[in-house]
Structure formats: structure tokens, C-alpha cells
Image (cartoon, rainbow, N blue to C red):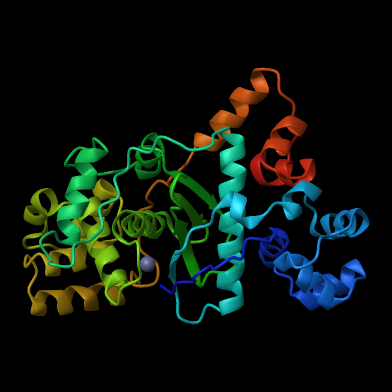
Length: 347
Ligand SMILES: [Zn+2]
């Protein structure tokens, strides 16, 4: 929801990004590394160079290779805007941390996939100001571009990966944020997806983040609503799902949930938005959902999205004779962290 603008000077190095990604303040890192906060601050901004000893100490405290923290930010390129799907109660510091993590994951992904720039089949389709194309129109164009059928999109992550999008699903350390996305020029769009939400919510979030990547290059007042409209059309195309929502009942909603892989609540809202459910029916069905306890805990489990691009490439590289240290180096990570993050702790 909120947007953070990164204006980086030419001399700034990744030290600051790594520190923020680790959730540390300058004061905390300075103390642990035994250097003054002034020196740390000037080192981060590139005002003074880091000597070899300090570089090694800082890398050790942060648990990253020295080369990573000494890399100029300008070499990496960072996304001017990052879009979250989050609650307003998410602390700013946590949002900044995830943004920094996202920047580092971009570096890791480019290293793992061994690419400078990449072929992305996902189109950038900025939402026109004249309103000529609606978010729903753009969702339909994306469906076409990605070769999706008009039916349920039950393996959205797989479809996106085939189009060059990277989806990383892991704990975000807070249930107040569902996902974060950025698409710097020359890189792949990268969605960092929290793994805490039920699968149906997670899938809607993935579609919502995709909407930001495709439609939003600059922040707008309406961006959240627009992203939700795109996601609804992508996951529940009006033409196909509309007629199924006539005279809908709670048991039918449960059946449709299994078919479309979206929550009963989202289907019911879709019915109202498409004019298939009137206000009276909408209220009555919502009361029925509440009484059954479905507002907090819906029946019917939807299969989880399972991104596999990164693990596939990692396994390929290992089979072709590379060792974990090679992969860690290309991802600019320590071997330990690489094993933790990308090999599930098993080397
Ligand atoms: Zn959003």
C-alpha cells in the first residue's frame, strides 16, 4: 500500500541495505562491530571507504560475503517503487526491512539464474489515465499474454514463472503484510509472498501483486482498489464465473471455492460486484457465513501455490557438477545462509 522512494547517491554501498534487511539500526550494528556510528553512516553513504578489517568485521556480523556489502548500490539498480499488500498497522521499520530484503533477493535470483537481464513475457501495461482500459481489461490482456484459459487459474505461480516472474514464498516475519513486489527495469518482476495466509488468500495476494507489477509504475490513490479489481478478473473471469453466481447459496459457494481456488468471501463479493447478487442477498449470505463461523475459518482447502523455478535451477546446477559454494557465491550469500534459505537447511 505504501511506497518508498529510493534515491541513492553514486557512492552508496549495499552495506546499508544489508543492515536494514537484517533488521538492525545503525546504532546496533556499530555497537556489534565495535565501530562508531559516524564511521558506519559515512561508510554506508560511500563518503569514506571501508578498510579491509572493518569490511571483514561488518560482513561477519551481518553474515554475508564481504563483496556484497562493498558493492555500489548503483551497480545493482533498485526499483523506484515497491508495492505491498499490507495492513496499516505494519511498522515502517518492518516495511523498510522487507524492501531491503527484496532488493537482496533480486541480486540472489539474478545470480542463481546466472543472468544479467532476462526475457520476461509479462507485459507492462500501465493503467491509462483516460480510463480507456479498466483494470479488468488489463487482467484480460494479461490472461491472453500468458496463454491462460478462460477457466480457473489453479497454478498461478507456475504460469507466472513460465512468463519470467519470480515468486518466492517464505515467512515475512509478520502477519501484517501479505506480500511485496518490485520490477526494476532490466530485471524480472519479483514477488515475495508471505507463507502465513491460507492458500486462497495467498493466491489472491499473488494476483494483486501481479497487478501492481503490470499496471503501476507510479503510486496512485486508487492503486489498491485497482489491484483488487485486476486480481478478481484474473482469478474469477466475469464471463465464466458470473452465471455460476446467480441464485448462489452457501453450499454452492463452497463448491465454487474448490473449482476456482478463491475464498467463498471473494466469490460472494464478486457476485455482488457483477450484479449477480443483490444487496439483500449479499447481506443475508454474509450473515449465514458468519453464523457458520466461515468468516474467520472457511471450509474447503485450496491447494497452495508452489513456485519451483529457483529450486529447479538450483538442482540443475548441482546435478551438472557445481557445488553449494559455487551457488552461494553466485547468489552473493554465505554458504550457510544459502543452505538455509534455498536448500531448506539441508546441504
Ligand atoms: Zn497493493
